[in-house]
Length: 404
Image (cartoon, rainbow, N blue to C red; front, side):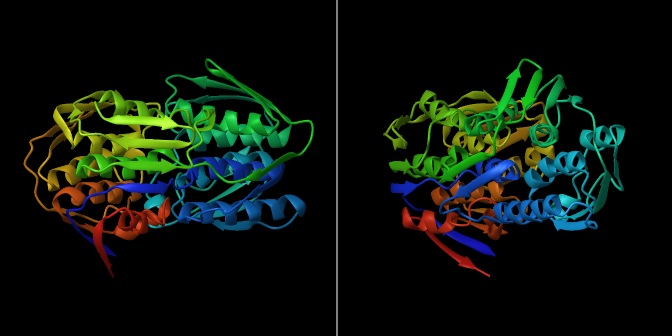
């Protein structure tokens, strides 16, 4: 699908898309109790998580059942959190996914699982996992994916508790903290201090009923659309709690760059006539923020720097490449090395964004096209995290058509 976009003014009021990260953590918590999510927005990744966790629950209820088969589609979060859970539960499972996920190696988690009682047939999808993890003392590198660490936390909760010692450096720390915060609010005891995580199962079944709070980084694409096009925007439904403290930093970053950006209760206001100043930000703690910051840098005066980008090469696309190529398509100078440097030349032109099969890159291209026009190939990829993205942009004043 292609999105054909004309210059537009983005302004108004919109409800934040639900947090995919928090929703998947709550869904995994349903392995430990009764979790009811009201009005759940079902993106492609959420559907993959719902299907996978439902199958795991059935396997838990029918011990001794034959191997199960799961297709996690393109959901790397589901896959990475699921592997340790399957290992601790001793569930024999054949796993597959879409082409983008099959091309991404598993890395450190495969070695750890195999060293501790599980067997994996491959270091990438499709694969079969079997065997049973029995240790309650985990030592693993924190340099690859926080989602593996989160999966180990759930695995230990399901098997009686234990301890995780992280080998530095620890990247995406705020997402490990998100997992701990969500679980602790439900009644678990997960203590993350320094390089150690102590995991103690709850005394009773977990219980939660409510809506998934809004996502700050998905909302930031709307916010920066308003900034780039000169509009003013209020985004509601953002619960400013510890559940999303890492991602919520984007509100202050935009404020520090010179724009009017602040929270009032659960609403984020963005606007003002001020220009955007160049900035330097480290995204090691929240790598997905790099795409949003690239969009903000495209509106800034001068050269901006995004550092801590080591994990960007392992995303849906190699984002060191896809971010710079997308910016260059619209006349913005960009280069990637030990970080990403972006310089707004003030000269913009209509861009053509290739099909990177990456939801955030499609959103980045859309933001830039709202200023100078453009065509986004592979626009359907936004359904991975926010299937309502283009409807929302149109509702806020975006001039676009979607073509098959």
